[in-house]
Image 1 (cartoon, helix red, strand yellow):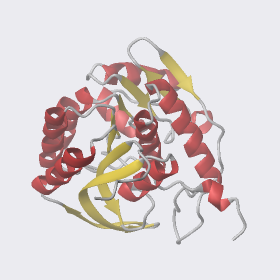
Image 2 (cartoon, rainbow, N blue to C red):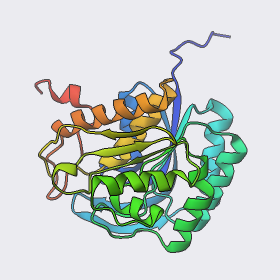
Image 3 (tube, one colour):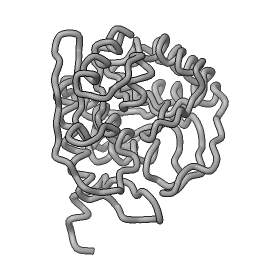
Image 4 (cartoon, one colour):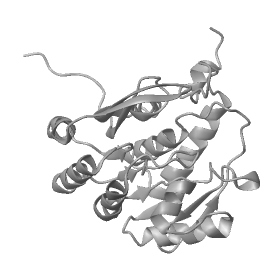
Length: 274
């Protein structure tokens, strides 16, 4: 028998929806994992028909199919970090939360995809409650945008102090840390995030990149945090490195399609002449 050869690399898993336009969801997550030299695996929760202009259709997979994907990956490869994105409904959220607990998956990054950056709620209230009670308490970190943070905290968020208060209140749901993202904030707060881990309250800023091509930034940030956790970085360092990665990818955002293009996940390659 020939000896097996090859590189040994960390494995990360994304449990999220498929974006046919390639800008967000599992497509963005897998590119982000690959950039960080982490082997990316996936459990698809739903299939969307979308492009740079918007979403025209969403079809959920059966919860059993989602769980089968998770179990297949974990049984064979092991997983050093897991990121959840769009879980779509209460049945899938509950099943995923139960399986993550049963399998003892650590380094869980929960991107609580339930409200778009424009403020439109994407999942119903029962699904939100399930997310709050079953999944977030298992998270190493939860990364809500402004509107998601408002729902999770019950606070209106208009100022930096509001973001800080929301982060502290969301932390009570049980996650190790919270990152309230400022991408949906106005003026000088755009791009300012707030970190809280129960004792350390930090304001994390990044240089503003003027581009309308920002599709998938939330997915990319959460996936980059997961990738860095899989690589053995501590939680706060993983967040800082992920923010740096997203800022760089935004500088090379892709001007494709007629609407909001995606970030440039492989920006070092984009710096080279074609």
